[in-house]
Length: 283
Image (cartoon, rainbow, N blue to C red):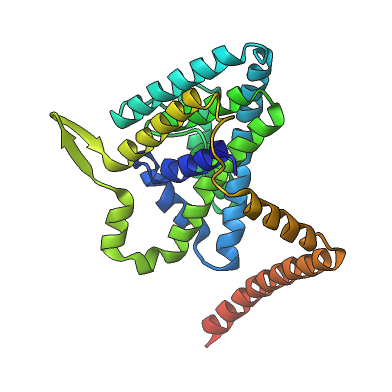
């Protein structure tokens, strides 16, 4: 299992839980207004919005990396130093907002705030991928790892994994929000601590330490080439064999049937609501 992919996923998780994403959660809740299949639908649309922005950024970073693929040692050294610097910036709570660096970033955020329904969720995903003062160093670290890969496809995949790291906890938090209670929500938000007279946020410190660790590993393992596998080879072989068994036309048909059934259930519920409302009005 690639340490870079794991780091990208964890970076996405911490970007969602960062103080800058505090307004993203209520906006997503207001957009979904539901649970179950409806929540999954909005989660998929949110992820699509993330991919629309993140994959081109990753592909662009990978394309830049291919220009310097013959200077691998310089890329590894420069990437490691940049990762460590970004990690220190994140720990200190400095950061920057990537949305201001991209054309149309501010307009995208304003449109996400003014729309509703699935369109709002899509725009929230697109804006959430690049917005946030304290999420800037995290995205910068992801793009640095993407550029160091020197391959546009794997670089785009790395940013897609980063986006998945944002979506998975978002869906879990939305589904369990009522059960978390006040204490659980407080833990998720993290807290502020004072170190040497400077206020630091626990989530930002944790994220910064993760980025610094990846930077040090990048330096000492020749760009993660010499890094140990997080998953043993035997386990990887078993997973590959298991996944090959799932590549069955009958299973594909069954999966399509389940998806079609979910769509029909959602459609039936939508059709039933107006009928129930009309019955209530007449009674």
